[in-house]
Length: 118
Image (cartoon, rainbow, N blue to C red; front, side, top):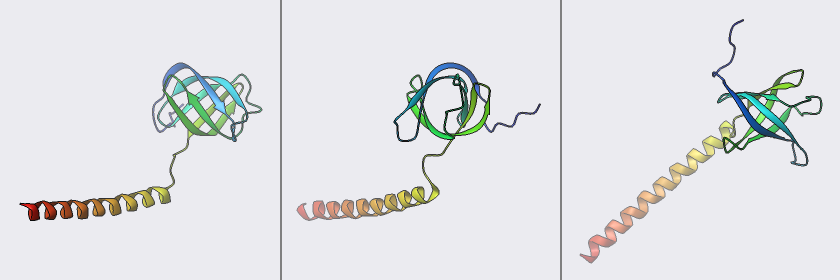
């Protein structure tokens, strides 16, 4: 059987919490393996786990937005969803460029003021 994962997974035995959308319900789980793109979760039962959820892993000090990739018995394959859409990243980059230009202008003004006082 060939490996289809994008990133290699490491075996783990971490406690995790699946947070349902809206945060009104949660389910404890065990993170059996983990990679930068996803994880295998042992949930006890997968029947009531939604297709999209947030996974909190205290030992990593992180939370991940997830989409269910597969369900087998008591286990779920969770794929991590990127946090920001491309449009959001572009908007942030444009704002950073504008702030850099503003910063450059302010530095020029400060240098001019310093030159006048000498």
